[in-house]
Length: 458
Image (tube, rainbow, N blue to C red; front, top):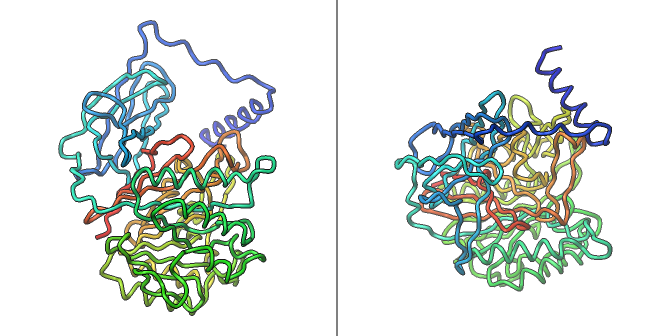
């Protein structure tokens, strides 16, 4: 057995024994008499302003886990301001484990340096140990902001309860309130509003959405295809102003199936939003998630808007096209080697065509949900949250669950759904030639700097 495999096996057995209370966690080593002395350095892969792709390295006289934050010129942790002037803190953008005096972490190829970031701050716990200036050529001006919108997924009314209370009665309005405070002009959702397509869930989505001035649009997810689904109730309570003989201004097309539609209105500032719904919640060989007619319609919309900025909302993500499929966007393999695969069924006729359309129309940004994985699970799969597979497809962006983000880890052989304690989504800001996609922690009221990305799409 290779030494690395043996170490991993020993670590997993130790973790299990600790979780069962058979052995105690090892005590942390004493800190050096003179205190911790540490240094961090970020090596950027290029000089593109605002792009953080590269490596962060830490050297220290004390082994442990270090956090790296973006900071102001004065060395304060970076915050952003809401439309009302309230401050929203940014989380760390990197976590580096130092062993034998050194450690490093590779930074995601899409990772963005947020607006206002001028320094890199190294922390051990609450102790600031190092401050370095962000190179002047890496600081982006962030000129010409056009508008912003939110992205949510997997709201799941009717699925998670605290006694008799539906936890989504807290998570969904809280997410909308947070996005409202940021001044979004609309919110798009990637489906799974319900547990089995029940009308009561659609009524709640409508109720909470109506408390805000911006439109909330959605597609259907696999749970929304449940046996309680009623198309008339969907059209009555969801996507207000889209269906019927006199649709609202900005609705460019509605498919014959009564679900799929295209929106380019005042709220989208000329950008095109497509909401594309599944017809099935079954993931099996030969079982279609969408029909040929739907795909014909989608191709027509892509072709009609091929010279514009297009955002596609569809529930289910795709496997990696090559290499290890279970490490595609939305998938991961945990410490125990267990694969949590939840994608569009690879090789099905509709999956192959859907994939081919994303390969052809790279002006599209594809927002999907379904996996629920919390954004920091990208430590297992660097493509978990965002990828374009080296420029071969449209950019695919994972939207975590508003209701119950999932985690796994050294003490979790099985994945865990964190309903009530975690809630995540996206805040997207559009500029003339790119968008900044910022992951939100709605419970903590913060931006997740390690899942803040730049997508060049114009």
